[in-house]
Length: 304
Image (cartoon, rainbow, N blue to C red; front, side, top):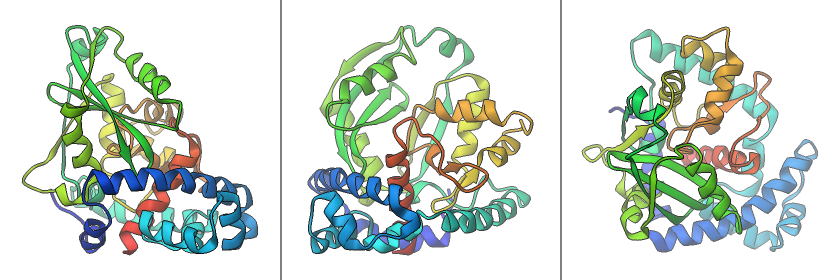
């Protein structure tokens, strides 16, 4: 599959940022501080708070915050703040519409893929979904990521679930995912899921000839929406109404929004790239702070 120019440009910088689980563990620890910084930014972004105030809210020094953001997303704190402003989101929406329209007009599914990570997907049959995962074995494990602890879930044919949890919420994340396929059998196996976790978050393993296989388990409508999410390029965003039009349901943005909210493969199937028509970030199943973090992190990737 093809990648866009911005993603190709970002690739060397990304490879120097993460190179294995040691680096991912550092990124996960960084995120705990980052989310406190984002919470302060979120509540005060209109005032464009100074780095000193953000650092104080995050519990670190300004110098520590600067180095942490550079390490975590490749941007200084002020640039990250600017990437999350409403004006920036509106400008990005305008640019995204142009890029996406051009891509669809020439018959492409989208000008870029997730982080230069080559993803191939398939969906389970309607019967398999209606059976609630009966006779399906899911293997799961918890792994560090740039967005906190990640719950990786594998079906026999590939990645079927990816969730995130803040400290102390790991069990709740697992229960939430299990409720989607209540009749499946679940086996915890860190060693079995570790290679997939690395494929998702370690850019050195993003290779065209070794695509990450994703299995979409949902209704026909939900799968159609999730497939359209995969067409949103890195560094771009889309409104719910535009996504509804792309999914062939222009009069059903609420139904499309519900399908987005049920996306079981967070981050890889980038539901975090869908925002409100005004440019406001709306709800996210794994927390609005994490959604802001993902968008800011990706902004750093395309500008690296």
